[in-house]
Length: 84
Image: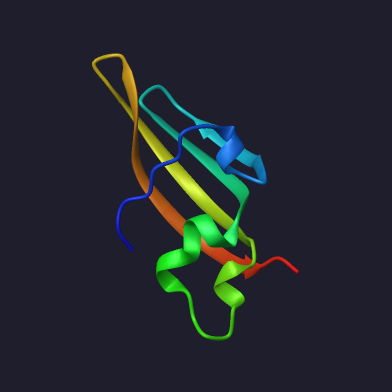
């Protein structure tokens, strides 16, 4: 999968931090997000139509701090489920 950009919380049907681990230069957040199927999964559309249904993703976001600035370093998928 390539790069994905989100402009605001309005891009998500749900966005919830379920765990946070923060240190001086590293922060990890386990997040559950529900994304509209058409906007996010359009490139993966299939004839079955399942790509148009919302998806619930569980991910870990890894942020690192360098020179006082936080930036997203990695996103790891843990689970993807179709929302019915």
